[in-house]
Image (tube, rainbow, N blue to C red; front, side, top):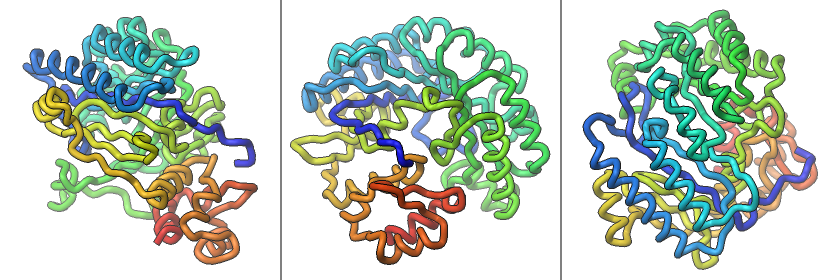
Length: 387
């Protein structure tokens, strides 16, 4: 926390939302649709994304490209030629300085692993793979369409194809024990990735899991067990040399951290293109939140009409400062004390002073960061800090 935190400056990151999935997972509340039989629609969406990039560039240039992140959905289902077209257009519109991180999310099915070499040739240099579990029963519960063996094979293929590799795992699953999670994590560590995002299962209201939870047919771990699983995650990964540089992201060394996510967490500007994509742009000197139209046809039609956004909200200086605090406190870098002072929070007065005395936050120099005690209960800390 005492090292200088890089300023994202005027650089601009790009988030590309690809909404198609081969199946919809029961825990997912993202803006996704089934992939089947949509070839013409997908070609039209690629054209709309390219046009949207051009239109947003006309609003924001001249800017330098910081990173690209293809999320979804399942962007590894994209035609690699379409991925390459988006990358090439972004590089032309926002010429980067040197090499930049270009990430793409993938699932570890054998069919998708067969596309990894083509995606790497298209320009992707970091793969984020949704392994989610290394247990077949757990994968079935999570609605995944790959097996544990497929995941192991896909990680091996990805490690050869991409310079940077991250995996996602989900814990606090129904019926999961600390011993089973420890063994699963330790097995995963032998797969050879440098970055891991372990997420605690969240039951979202509008999902199949949300409905099962209301019926009582899905019972997640209780609060004490969930806390024990969290602590196990930290202990096992730290012992293996992974630093929790953000609440749900662990990297083996500074170079393995996600440059794109850090740009966002540091308050940098980023374009969001694709159905439902969020963005944060400085327009006419004002930090502006954008949200693209969610439905694919509405998005494509909106791009053609020059109105791709369903929301364009100018943030006040206080709203922008609060957002930077919310994001910054998720990371080991913490938030700028100046942003907290802008919100009327002083190290000498409650609630900031009390949270520091109680060991939930640490103040050092011009930064405030959550401590090891504060991070597991960060939502409560933020509520107390910003109420």
